[in-house]
Image 1 (cartoon, helix red, strand yellow):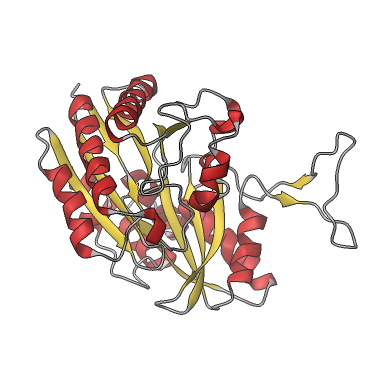
Image 2 (cartoon, rainbow, N blue to C red):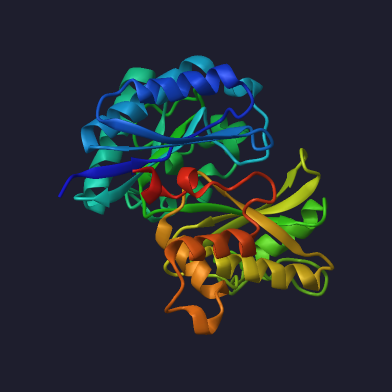
Length: 343
């Protein structure tokens, strides 16, 4: 079986086409790698790049992209809606075929070592590559974001896994690791009120939210720890954002295991919670690529019950696009968004 690894680095630049093109070109130049998708977002001021290839080539392409980003992105000038820690913010390695998750953990370590040594950028390991429980969750590593990194990096608990515990003002820090296929899935609301999106996100994400008493104070247990109300969806991370271009709020979701919770389940739950707040979910978008199986699962959910045995793959994809409103903001092209159709 051919060894194929996917890499989906996120860069803190979504507006400057010259910078985005330079990063993309640094990936294209590496033999053994195929660039599948480049998706900038002006509101998030962030670009998601997706490429696949054999393991050594993928690591080389990831490094070259990070090197280009370090030369062209200055975090001291960066502002955007999405949480971020550095110019090359996060670099996940995902097993596709002929490789294991442990193989991708080794790749993440190889990439981290090189970035730290050659670019002098501190690197943290997350998900399956994490070396301690508090670093498994990307959100925990990003807490405080770039603006809080100069102080955070001095804390022994947050000493980088690779590189010096020194603040790199221009590049910030990079997070890398190995993970399952993550679907970056955002649900659009018919309101510009970000507070509504924040509330929905807190209700649905697996980590939930702090429990508060009648006075609005966070409830603590006997150990002094905050009591949390679990969210309604497993394997889901979420936050509320405002898309200024469209003047709408959005529930920005990471579906970290679509076999546990798929996009249609997240969409329907957002819709349910939105209605209790006087709002509605009007459509959604996928940032980067999506597995065909996730689209088929959504299509099957929305297909007429009696038609399941007769319905074609193409029709299931069409049903998913229609019912999830995937073309509300920009046209969803299956040939450019579904990973199996790109390989």
